[in-house]
Image (cartoon, rainbow, N blue to C red; front, side):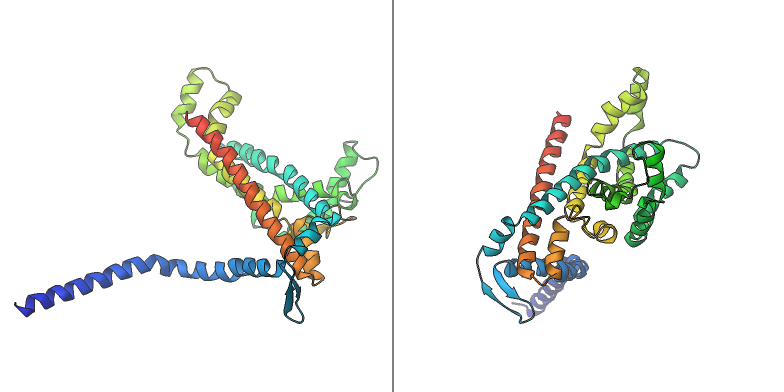
Length: 310
């Protein structure tokens, strides 16, 4: 047998193997920074919380005794946990419909061929890039007794005297929810705007020829075509609503009298008191609730998408 051709074939196979190896490794090299960051700041903390939730962990001594489900039993018997869960659900019910429909209406309006439409898009997106600290300070001034919101409510006859909504137990949660809706308005509007611009214009022209009004075209064409975006906005709102923290911490701190203490504030308070086992158990409950709520919402909206395709 001639050894030279065999050696050449071997070198060619080796080069091809190295080429394929590099080709397969390249995507993983690009993903590596994200994998490292996710592992450090997401997966590792979740695993650590899972471990601590089954221990009576003393963080100062860095040791803990296995207690099984005792931490979960304790939080389920804690009335403040159920109050925090109720506040979280109410907050979500306030924010979810507004986050779905207000950005949709804004997107439809700025999608019209009007003069200055770019200026409107920038204006509506401005809250998204405003730091939450700045937004919270601004809204605290607006909600104060001398602020514009208080004066407007007096002018409309809702209150006889200027009232700070953030210090009233009956209105504080709704007032914080309004800040969340305002902050996310532009972000969700951009999502709807991208979907609107993918709808073929001849569909609207055909509807106009058939005599459909603007409202009928919005209901029959626009809303069904936006169902995938509605699904995305719903899931993002549910996840953000379940873990709402910054708005509350910067405006009410969970008060007044615990009226704005949500699940994340409940977890934060326990961590601040170095009760890490209870905080970790509550964190896992919050994670499971967020996943369950998101899956339920995705199932409901995907069923709606299937109905539209039929």
